[in-house]
Image 1 (cartoon, rainbow, N blue to C red):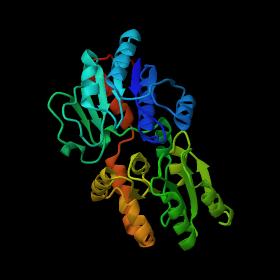
Image 2: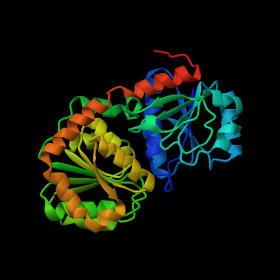
Image 3: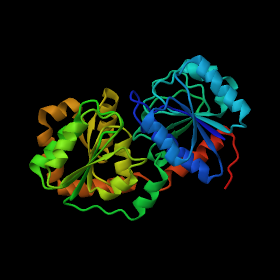
Image 4: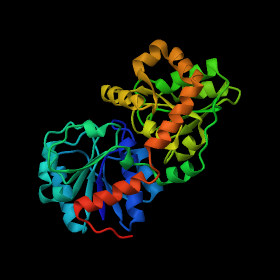
Length: 339
Protein backbone atom coordinates (compact mmCIF):
# COMPACT_ATOMS: atom_id res chain seq x y z
CA UNK A 1 0.00 0.00 0.00
CA UNK A 2 1.20 3.50 -0.89
CA UNK A 3 -0.34 6.45 1.02
CA UNK A 4 -0.39 9.80 -0.79
CA UNK A 5 -0.94 13.04 1.14
CA UNK A 6 -1.82 15.93 -1.19
CA UNK A 7 -4.68 18.34 -1.88
CA UNK A 8 -6.79 19.45 -4.87
CA UNK A 9 -9.05 22.42 -4.28
CA UNK A 10 -9.65 26.03 -5.26
CA UNK A 11 -6.59 27.16 -3.30
CA UNK A 12 -4.08 24.57 -4.51
CA UNK A 13 -5.25 23.73 -8.00
CA UNK A 14 -4.93 20.23 -9.43
CA UNK A 15 -1.24 19.88 -10.24
CA UNK A 16 -0.11 18.23 -6.99
CA UNK A 17 -2.87 15.63 -7.25
CA UNK A 18 -2.24 15.01 -10.94
CA UNK A 19 1.42 14.17 -10.48
CA UNK A 20 0.60 11.96 -7.48
CA UNK A 21 -1.95 10.07 -9.58
CA UNK A 22 0.83 9.61 -12.16
CA UNK A 23 2.92 7.92 -9.47
CA UNK A 24 -0.02 5.85 -8.26
CA UNK A 25 -0.52 4.52 -11.79
CA UNK A 26 3.16 3.55 -11.93
CA UNK A 27 2.92 1.84 -8.52
CA UNK A 28 -0.21 0.04 -9.71
CA UNK A 29 1.81 -1.36 -12.63
CA UNK A 30 4.31 -2.64 -10.04
CA UNK A 31 1.59 -4.37 -8.01
CA UNK A 32 0.86 -1.79 -5.29
CA UNK A 33 -2.46 -0.28 -4.22
CA UNK A 34 -2.72 3.41 -3.32
CA UNK A 35 -4.76 5.50 -0.90
CA UNK A 36 -5.07 9.28 -1.25
CA UNK A 37 -5.54 11.44 1.83
CA UNK A 38 -6.21 15.18 1.55
CA UNK A 39 -8.60 18.06 0.96
CA UNK A 40 -10.25 17.16 -2.34
CA UNK A 41 -12.99 19.34 -3.82
CA UNK A 42 -15.20 18.49 -6.82
CA UNK A 43 -12.66 18.30 -9.65
CA UNK A 44 -10.11 16.55 -7.46
CA UNK A 45 -12.64 13.94 -6.36
CA UNK A 46 -13.61 13.39 -10.00
CA UNK A 47 -9.94 12.91 -10.95
CA UNK A 48 -9.54 10.24 -8.29
CA UNK A 49 -12.78 8.43 -9.09
CA UNK A 50 -11.97 8.35 -12.80
CA UNK A 51 -8.48 7.03 -12.10
CA UNK A 52 -9.94 4.38 -9.77
CA UNK A 53 -8.09 5.29 -6.56
CA UNK A 54 -9.55 5.37 -3.05
CA UNK A 55 -9.41 8.61 -1.07
CA UNK A 56 -10.17 10.03 2.36
CA UNK A 57 -10.78 13.67 3.25
CA UNK A 58 -8.34 15.43 5.56
CA UNK A 59 -8.55 19.16 6.30
CA UNK A 60 -5.01 20.45 6.87
CA UNK A 61 -1.30 20.03 7.44
CA UNK A 62 -1.18 20.12 11.23
CA UNK A 63 0.89 17.93 13.52
CA UNK A 64 -2.30 16.05 14.39
CA UNK A 65 -2.84 15.36 10.70
CA UNK A 66 0.67 13.91 10.54
CA UNK A 67 -0.14 11.63 13.47
CA UNK A 68 -3.25 10.45 11.62
CA UNK A 69 -1.04 9.54 8.65
CA UNK A 70 1.15 7.56 11.04
CA UNK A 71 -1.89 5.64 12.24
CA UNK A 72 -2.90 4.87 8.65
CA UNK A 73 0.63 3.69 7.95
CA UNK A 74 0.62 1.37 10.94
CA UNK A 75 -2.86 -0.03 10.24
CA UNK A 76 -2.58 -0.67 6.51
CA UNK A 77 0.74 -2.47 6.06
CA UNK A 78 1.92 0.60 4.20
CA UNK A 79 5.14 0.44 2.16
CA UNK A 80 5.59 4.14 1.49
CA UNK A 81 4.17 7.61 2.22
CA UNK A 82 4.38 10.27 -0.52
CA UNK A 83 3.86 13.92 0.44
CA UNK A 84 3.23 16.63 -2.17
CA UNK A 85 2.15 20.11 -1.08
CA UNK A 86 3.49 23.64 -0.73
CA UNK A 87 1.86 23.60 2.73
CA UNK A 88 4.25 20.88 3.91
CA UNK A 89 6.56 22.01 6.71
CA UNK A 90 9.38 20.61 8.86
CA UNK A 91 7.13 20.24 11.91
CA UNK A 92 4.84 17.95 9.93
CA UNK A 93 7.74 15.77 8.83
CA UNK A 94 9.14 15.64 12.37
CA UNK A 95 5.75 14.48 13.67
CA UNK A 96 5.87 11.44 11.37
CA UNK A 97 8.52 9.90 13.64
CA UNK A 98 9.80 6.59 12.31
CA UNK A 99 7.35 6.73 9.40
CA UNK A 100 9.66 9.41 7.96
CA UNK A 101 12.08 6.58 7.19
CA UNK A 102 9.60 5.46 4.51
CA UNK A 103 8.47 8.89 3.36
CA UNK A 104 9.32 10.64 0.09
CA UNK A 105 8.63 14.34 -0.51
CA UNK A 106 7.75 15.57 -3.98
CA UNK A 107 9.30 19.02 -4.01
CA UNK A 108 9.87 21.96 -6.35
CA UNK A 109 11.74 24.78 -4.64
CA UNK A 110 13.76 23.42 -1.68
CA UNK A 111 12.13 25.73 0.86
CA UNK A 112 12.25 23.52 3.96
CA UNK A 113 15.19 23.53 6.35
CA UNK A 114 15.52 19.91 7.55
CA UNK A 115 13.58 17.58 5.23
CA UNK A 116 13.30 14.77 7.78
CA UNK A 117 12.38 12.07 5.24
CA UNK A 118 13.98 9.22 3.34
CA UNK A 119 13.87 10.76 -0.13
CA UNK A 120 13.15 13.89 -2.16
CA UNK A 121 11.90 13.93 -5.74
CA UNK A 122 12.32 17.20 -7.64
CA UNK A 123 11.92 16.73 -11.40
CA UNK A 124 12.33 20.40 -12.32
CA UNK A 125 15.01 21.54 -14.72
CA UNK A 126 18.24 22.42 -12.85
CA UNK A 127 16.96 20.68 -9.69
CA UNK A 128 20.55 19.59 -9.06
CA UNK A 129 21.30 23.20 -8.11
CA UNK A 130 18.78 23.21 -5.23
CA UNK A 131 20.57 23.01 -1.87
CA UNK A 132 19.06 20.08 0.02
CA UNK A 133 20.39 18.91 3.41
CA UNK A 134 22.43 15.75 3.78
CA UNK A 135 20.42 12.64 4.59
CA UNK A 136 17.53 12.14 2.16
CA UNK A 137 18.27 10.30 -1.07
CA UNK A 138 17.70 12.60 -4.03
CA UNK A 139 15.84 12.04 -7.29
CA UNK A 140 16.54 15.16 -9.33
CA UNK A 141 15.75 16.37 -12.82
CA UNK A 142 13.50 15.41 -15.77
CA UNK A 143 14.59 11.75 -15.65
CA UNK A 144 12.02 11.54 -12.82
CA UNK A 145 9.28 13.60 -14.49
CA UNK A 146 5.82 12.52 -13.30
CA UNK A 147 3.30 12.12 -16.09
CA UNK A 148 0.04 10.26 -16.43
CA UNK A 149 -0.01 6.81 -18.02
CA UNK A 150 -1.87 7.97 -21.15
CA UNK A 151 0.86 10.48 -21.99
CA UNK A 152 3.22 7.59 -22.67
CA UNK A 153 0.82 6.16 -25.27
CA UNK A 154 0.10 9.50 -26.95
CA UNK A 155 3.80 10.39 -27.09
CA UNK A 156 4.56 7.28 -29.18
CA UNK A 157 2.51 8.58 -32.13
CA UNK A 158 2.86 12.33 -31.54
CA UNK A 159 3.73 14.65 -34.41
CA UNK A 160 3.73 18.44 -34.49
CA UNK A 161 2.73 20.59 -37.47
CA UNK A 162 4.95 23.65 -38.00
CA UNK A 163 3.66 26.20 -38.85
CA UNK A 164 1.06 25.24 -36.24
CA UNK A 165 -2.61 24.54 -36.87
CA UNK A 166 -3.92 23.75 -33.39
CA UNK A 167 -3.35 25.70 -30.17
CA UNK A 168 -4.02 24.44 -26.65
CA UNK A 169 -4.57 27.04 -23.91
CA UNK A 170 -4.52 25.74 -20.34
CA UNK A 171 -3.69 27.54 -17.11
CA UNK A 172 -4.34 24.66 -14.74
CA UNK A 173 -6.73 24.57 -11.84
CA UNK A 174 -6.19 28.21 -10.90
CA UNK A 175 -6.06 31.03 -13.47
CA UNK A 176 -5.05 33.89 -11.20
CA UNK A 177 -4.80 36.60 -13.86
CA UNK A 178 -7.73 35.66 -16.11
CA UNK A 179 -5.12 34.66 -18.67
CA UNK A 180 -7.22 32.09 -20.53
CA UNK A 181 -9.70 34.63 -21.90
CA UNK A 182 -6.94 37.10 -22.82
CA UNK A 183 -4.85 34.54 -24.68
CA UNK A 184 -7.84 33.09 -26.54
CA UNK A 185 -8.92 36.56 -27.64
CA UNK A 186 -5.41 37.33 -28.93
CA UNK A 187 -5.39 34.19 -31.06
CA UNK A 188 -8.85 34.86 -32.45
CA UNK A 189 -7.99 38.51 -33.22
CA UNK A 190 -4.68 37.82 -34.97
CA UNK A 191 -4.70 34.26 -36.36
CA UNK A 192 -6.87 31.65 -38.06
CA UNK A 193 -5.60 28.83 -35.87
CA UNK A 194 -7.91 26.38 -34.13
CA UNK A 195 -7.90 27.09 -30.40
CA UNK A 196 -8.94 24.81 -27.56
CA UNK A 197 -9.11 26.10 -23.98
CA UNK A 198 -9.32 23.74 -21.02
CA UNK A 199 -10.62 25.29 -17.81
CA UNK A 200 -11.33 23.91 -14.35
CA UNK A 201 -14.41 23.96 -12.16
CA UNK A 202 -12.83 26.97 -10.43
CA UNK A 203 -12.75 29.15 -13.58
CA UNK A 204 -14.73 32.36 -13.07
CA UNK A 205 -14.99 33.85 -16.60
CA UNK A 206 -16.91 31.06 -18.33
CA UNK A 207 -19.57 33.39 -19.75
CA UNK A 208 -16.92 35.47 -21.51
CA UNK A 209 -15.30 32.36 -22.99
CA UNK A 210 -18.65 31.06 -24.19
CA UNK A 211 -19.30 34.38 -25.92
CA UNK A 212 -15.95 34.11 -27.71
CA UNK A 213 -16.73 30.55 -28.79
CA UNK A 214 -20.14 31.48 -30.20
CA UNK A 215 -18.63 34.20 -32.39
CA UNK A 216 -15.50 32.32 -33.51
CA UNK A 217 -16.89 30.54 -36.61
CA UNK A 218 -15.82 27.23 -35.17
CA UNK A 219 -12.21 28.24 -34.50
CA UNK A 220 -12.52 28.08 -30.71
CA UNK A 221 -13.82 25.36 -28.38
CA UNK A 222 -13.98 25.08 -24.59
CA UNK A 223 -13.48 21.93 -22.59
CA UNK A 224 -13.90 21.57 -18.85
CA UNK A 225 -11.05 20.05 -16.87
CA UNK A 226 -10.10 16.62 -18.20
CA UNK A 227 -8.87 13.70 -16.07
CA UNK A 228 -5.56 14.25 -17.86
CA UNK A 229 -4.34 16.37 -20.77
CA UNK A 230 -2.77 13.59 -22.86
CA UNK A 231 -5.35 13.77 -25.65
CA UNK A 232 -5.28 17.58 -25.63
CA UNK A 233 -1.49 17.75 -25.99
CA UNK A 234 -1.73 14.98 -28.59
CA UNK A 235 -4.01 17.28 -30.61
CA UNK A 236 -2.00 20.48 -30.13
CA UNK A 237 0.84 21.82 -32.27
CA UNK A 238 1.67 24.58 -29.78
CA UNK A 239 0.44 25.44 -26.30
CA UNK A 240 0.11 28.40 -23.97
CA UNK A 241 0.22 27.47 -20.28
CA UNK A 242 1.00 28.65 -16.78
CA UNK A 243 4.40 27.97 -15.27
CA UNK A 244 3.60 24.77 -13.39
CA UNK A 245 3.03 21.14 -14.36
CA UNK A 246 1.40 21.84 -17.75
CA UNK A 247 4.59 23.23 -19.28
CA UNK A 248 6.36 20.01 -18.28
CA UNK A 249 3.58 17.95 -19.87
CA UNK A 250 3.92 20.00 -23.05
CA UNK A 251 7.67 19.41 -23.08
CA UNK A 252 7.24 15.68 -22.44
CA UNK A 253 4.95 15.53 -25.47
CA UNK A 254 7.23 17.67 -27.64
CA UNK A 255 4.69 20.52 -27.98
CA UNK A 256 6.30 24.00 -28.19
CA UNK A 257 4.97 26.07 -25.32
CA UNK A 258 4.63 29.75 -24.42
CA UNK A 259 4.54 30.19 -20.65
CA UNK A 260 2.93 32.96 -18.61
CA UNK A 261 3.75 32.32 -14.97
CA UNK A 262 1.35 32.91 -12.08
CA UNK A 263 3.74 33.28 -9.14
CA UNK A 264 7.24 34.56 -8.43
CA UNK A 265 8.47 30.97 -8.00
CA UNK A 266 7.02 30.01 -11.38
CA UNK A 267 8.67 33.05 -13.00
CA UNK A 268 12.10 31.92 -11.80
CA UNK A 269 11.59 28.27 -12.71
CA UNK A 270 10.19 29.09 -16.16
CA UNK A 271 13.26 31.22 -16.80
CA UNK A 272 15.40 28.14 -16.18
CA UNK A 273 13.12 26.11 -18.46
CA UNK A 274 13.62 28.66 -21.23
CA UNK A 275 17.41 28.61 -20.81
CA UNK A 276 17.27 24.96 -21.87
CA UNK A 277 15.16 25.86 -24.96
CA UNK A 278 12.15 24.03 -23.48
CA UNK A 279 9.73 26.98 -23.66
CA UNK A 280 9.34 30.60 -24.59
CA UNK A 281 9.15 32.51 -21.33
CA UNK A 282 6.36 35.08 -21.54
CA UNK A 283 7.06 36.35 -18.04
CA UNK A 284 4.35 37.02 -15.50
CA UNK A 285 0.61 37.29 -15.97
CA UNK A 286 1.00 41.06 -15.66
CA UNK A 287 3.19 41.10 -18.78
CA UNK A 288 0.41 39.32 -20.67
CA UNK A 289 -1.81 42.32 -19.97
CA UNK A 290 0.90 44.80 -20.99
CA UNK A 291 2.38 43.41 -24.22
CA UNK A 292 0.96 39.93 -24.71
CA UNK A 293 0.19 40.54 -28.39
CA UNK A 294 3.88 41.07 -29.18
CA UNK A 295 4.96 38.07 -27.10
CA UNK A 296 2.45 35.88 -28.94
CA UNK A 297 3.55 37.20 -32.34
CA UNK A 298 7.22 36.54 -31.57
CA UNK A 299 6.38 33.00 -30.40
CA UNK A 300 4.45 32.06 -33.54
CA UNK A 301 6.77 33.64 -36.12
CA UNK A 302 9.85 31.80 -34.86
CA UNK A 303 9.38 28.64 -36.96
CA UNK A 304 13.01 27.63 -36.61
CA UNK A 305 12.80 28.23 -32.88
CA UNK A 306 9.72 26.02 -32.60
CA UNK A 307 11.45 23.18 -34.42
CA UNK A 308 14.51 23.53 -32.19
CA UNK A 309 12.29 23.48 -29.11
CA UNK A 310 10.73 20.18 -30.21
CA UNK A 311 14.20 18.64 -30.56
CA UNK A 312 15.30 19.93 -27.16
CA UNK A 313 12.15 18.56 -25.53
CA UNK A 314 12.61 15.08 -26.96
CA UNK A 315 16.19 15.01 -25.78
CA UNK A 316 15.36 16.22 -22.26
CA UNK A 317 12.49 13.88 -21.32
CA UNK A 318 12.63 10.10 -21.33
CA UNK A 319 9.52 8.05 -22.05
CA UNK A 320 9.56 5.96 -18.85
CA UNK A 321 10.40 8.69 -16.32
CA UNK A 322 7.43 7.99 -14.00
CA UNK A 323 8.33 4.31 -13.76
CA UNK A 324 11.90 5.40 -12.97
CA UNK A 325 10.58 7.50 -10.11
CA UNK A 326 8.31 4.80 -8.68
CA UNK A 327 11.04 2.16 -8.67
CA UNK A 328 13.56 4.51 -7.12
CA UNK A 329 11.13 5.53 -4.37
CA UNK A 330 10.57 1.91 -3.38
CA UNK A 331 14.30 1.28 -3.28
CA UNK A 332 14.90 4.36 -1.13
CA UNK A 333 12.12 3.42 1.29
CA UNK A 334 13.31 -0.18 1.54
CA UNK A 335 10.23 -1.66 -0.10
CA UNK A 336 10.34 -4.70 -2.34
CA UNK A 337 9.59 -4.22 -6.05
CA UNK A 338 6.94 -6.56 -7.38
CA UNK A 339 7.20 -6.89 -11.15
